[in-house]
Image 1: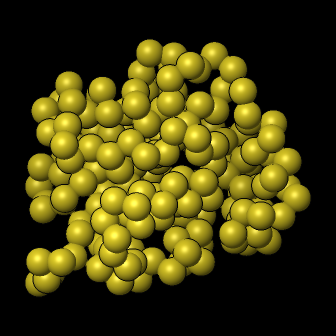
Image 2: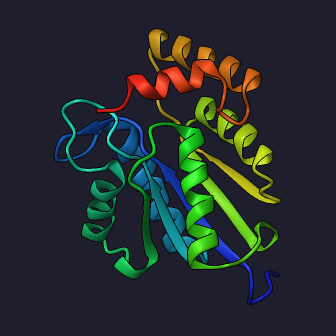
Image 3: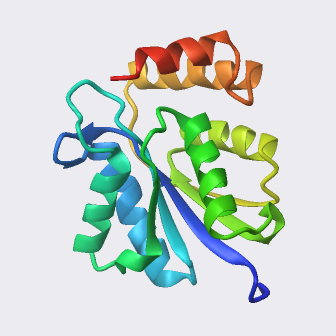
Length: 180
């Protein structure tokens, strides 16, 4: 049983986005997050994702929040702290900053559940362990990936293994290319 000081947070990283709402992969993640939120005692849903393409003008996390509100998730339980994140490393860094600034609690009192596809979750686990999350649950959503998507995920995995804190040249260069 969790102590009253523990916080249960459901992290939903953005995937594909349209200018006015979630794309296919993000919608699948959000729908699963809604199901989990209604079934289990989560305190917050943390939507992560900034503006990562040249046609977006609203952070992915804000579009995700709108989607969740339309699906009857209470607004006060939706956190959109990742307005500037461009990748999984920055999603976790912004979550950590939000936890520190708004909750003032250490990571040992956070139960973090991440909802995404398997390939993405493997990278998130590496990043979260590096960031010292103690209680981590990875919730896999099934979604078909194309061969190019699988290759991209494999390359990202190798980069994450090489640079688990996202500070080396490849990650810095990729972020710079994703800044609009």
